[in-house]
Each structure stands twice: as structure tokens, then as C-alpha cells.
Amino acid sequence: MTMTGAAEPSRLAVLGAGHVGPVIARLAIRAGYPVAIATSGDPEAIALITELLIPGAQPRWASDAVADADVVVLAIPLHRFPDIDPGLLSGKLVVDAMNYWPATEGVLKTFEDAGSSEIVARRLAGSTVVKALNHIGYHELEDRARPAGAPDRRASGVAGDDPAAVGTISGLVDQIGYDPVRLESLRAGRALQPGGPVFGAVLTVPEFEQAMPADARSLA
Amino acid sequence: MTYTFGLDTFGDRNGDADGKPLSHAQTIRNVVEEGVFAEHAGVDFFGIGEHHTEYFPMPAGDVVLAAIAARTERIHLGSAVTVLSSDDPVRVFQRYSTLNAISSGRAEVILGRGSSIESFPLFGYDLADYEELFEEKATLFAELLQGGPVSWQGKTRAPLLNQDVVPHTESGPFPAWIGVGGNPQSVVRAARLGFSLALAIIGGPPARFAAYSELFQRALEKFGRPPLPVLVHSPGHVAATDAQAKAEFWPRWQDIITVMAPERGFAVPTEDSFDRETGPHGALYVGSPETVAQKIATNLRALRATRFDLKYGMPGLTHDQLMTNIELYGHQVIPRVRELLS
Image (tube, rainbow over all chains, first blue to last red; front, side, top):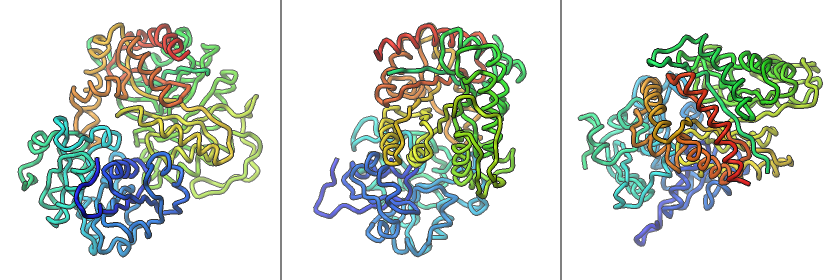
């Protein structure tokens, strides 16, 4: 699968080299995006991981990766999110692929009072935050990806308050192998969280739409 | 190439023939019988995973392993896994070096987190500290394994100064693995600290872990260590036919997932997803001896792994069904996998 059209493909910075980050990075590389991957530390520490698991990606310092990126994907454990300097991501389009999942990560008081991406967006006030790529398990995300038009292609939710940003990330989701289902706000994106109707499920668009609560239906 | 084959249990609470749950105590006595029977069936390793729940009442697997050790002579016995982050590495070493003494050198340990987190609140740990807890404690455990006085200082337990920790082993370190579920940085850590690698593959296509196995060997080289083995741990159930294995396992799987789904906040899997996972590219080894053997051989080869541990059982299965599983695994699956790989 390659990008079409004359425009340069968007450059991605994936923050996080744990369970999720490498999977998203691989899918993006396969779709033709230039991808940098970073952790909180020295890129040398993930050089071998990148070479073997994410061939084609560039391990970089987080600040360098973000500075050159059009889209930044947050794929770090949510309890580490408060360590991120919001200034680093200022002006960037940020995909929040993280989850607040007390059953596996424990209770985080900061994330108790609203949807996790709403709280992320509140802290990243200078960025545009879109919630995506969080609800299909990292162990299945790659295996279930399909090219556009495949009969067994599945849906992936994209939620945000900025329609243009949701459009851009929907394009990314489409390119990496899923039918994007747009949700009109980060608040509506609560339906994509742990405990929500589609978390951990891999559904077709009609199944996905049907599982959504009425107030979180797609606008499309 | 020498391959070894194990069975793991979480002390899955047994049901009776009518589906009524047996007591925790009877389930534990049954695990002892299963471990002893595993040796008779020709299984190389019997592992017990630490859990603290109503349906996995197995917080002190080392005690159960000691009972099995007293009644067996050949089978290796170990944890699968020990939740090291919420335990004391000195105590874990002492318990398993004691097991090693009782069994005349048959103890092993797999350190990790498992998929359950109950031990953290139970013992007063914060899951947000998981990374630091595991890093420090695994580092200390690696030193304890070498034997001899240990000096250690960190944030997660009291310091040790030239401390002799007993009982000493008779012939050096016993086998120790780190269990990894899909985080490549954990693979690199296992290599850095000199542990063998246990890949817990409980969902999705196993073949994607081939890159992890290569990452492990390359990381060992980078850290100047000799090659170390890789094992694969996956759930399953063996019965006479594919249809019977699925018919026994699916309702119990559905029950447990239905209980866990709201607790864990994920969607309840469908029969379609069960069929994917039990198919040739899924992570569940449910079927006849031939079906399961073919799948094990394929994945050991693909992952360049030399040991396979089948996590047998599921809450609600009967002791008789588990004994049949063990018998078929030992007498038919293992010889068939060896034949396929030779």
C-alpha cells in the first residue's frame, strides 16, 4: 500500500516503544508514512528494537522526532503522560492512543473525572488532540488491518473536537487498514474507552455503529 | 536441538460433573495429583502461576510444587509466573531454592507480571510503580541467583550489605526466565539481566513473536552474553477430537471471559473470535492431539523456541477432563511434536 497524490506523506512521530507504539509504527510505515519513534530516553536504547521490529523507522530523541512531525502518536502508559512537557507538543496534531484502564494499570486520580482524552487535551491546550487507535488490542491491530474495500475490513473509531483534525486522522486510519468511524467530539470518544461498547472488539462498520450509544453516533 | 514440554496451571477452580464449583482446597489437592500425573505422562515441566482470585485460588504455588516434588523424581517444577514486583526477591529466591533442595535440583522460576494485578493492592503496592519495582527486583534476583554474599541498594526494599542468603543451591543457579507479553523493552531487559525468555502468547497470531525471539538473541550478543533459550507459554485444551476439545473448553472460556470482561472493561469475545484463536493462526491450542501437536511444532519452529508450556485447564473444567488433557498431552502430543521437529 502506498500513498497516492502529489503531496508529501505526513511525517509521524510515535512516542512509546512498548506494546502499542511499534505496532502503530509498523502499520504506518507499511502505508508509506515516514516514521520516527522515541521514548523518554536515549534513542540508542531502542536502536535494536527499531531495527528488528520496526524496520524503516528512525529511532530519535523525542524532541527531535516531534519537531519534524506533522502527527504525533502518544503510545505511552497513561501514568507516564504527566511527565510529558505540553510545550513539546504545542501546535501539533496529536493522536491519543492511550487508555485509562484501571483494571490493568491501576487507578489514576487525575483521570477519574472525565474521558481520558478530554483530560489529555486539557493538559495539551496548545495541541489538537484526536482519540484514535486505542480500542483494538495491540495484539490484533496488525493482523486485522486490510486494504480499502476488502470485504472483511473492520472499523476504527476517530474522535475529536476539531473536524479538520478528525478528517486528517481518519485518512491515516484508512491508510493503515481500517474504515474510520468519526465521532464528533472527544467526549463522544468515551465510547472507545475501556468499559465502552467497542473496547477490545474488532467490528465491521455496521456492527460498530450499532454498538455505539445514540449520543455518540457517527456524523458521517 | 533438544526440545522440552511443560504444563502450566493457575489453579483454575475445578467444577464437578454438574458444573458446580469445587472448593478451593479440593482444587489445590487436585493440582497436586495433576502435577504428579504429569510426570507419569512424560511431561518435562510443571508450572504454577500466581493468582489471587476466587476462580484462580493459587497465591502460594511454591507450597503446592513442594508437595509435587515430594512425590516425583524427574519432572521440573516452577512458577509460571511469580509476580516479582509485589513480592520480595529475597523471599522468592529462598522459596525456590528450598524447592530446588527438596526436588534435588528441579526448581525453575518464571518472573513476570501475568495478566492479573490483584497482588498489588493486596500487598500494598502501586501499579504505577510497576516498572521501577520490576527493574530493581529482577536485578537483585539475578544477583541472588549467582549465589554468594550479595550487596544491593535501591528504592524498593531494604539494602543488603554482603548478605549471605540461604539455602545455597548445590549446583549453581537454577533456570530463571522473564515472562514477556509483547513489550519489546522487556525482551531487551531479560537479555541485559541474563534471564531466559518466556513469551506469553495468549491472543493474536503467534508468528508475530518471531521478531521478539530474534531481538532477544541479538540483545544477548550486544550485552556479551551467550545464547539463552526461548519458551512459549499459551493456553489450550486437548481432548480426543477437535470437536470434543472445543465443546469442553468454549463454554468454560466464555464463562470466565464473561466474568472478567466487565472487571477488565473489554468486550466479551464472540464464538467467531474463539474460532480465530483456535485456528491455525491463533493463540489457543484447543483440539485433538494431532491438531495441537501440529500447531506447537509450527510455532516452535517459527519462533526458534525450544520449550512449549501449555497452560491447561480453565475454571469449571472437571479434574477428570484435566487428567485426560494431561494424559493426551504427555502420551500423544509431545512425542508427535518431537517427531515433527526431528
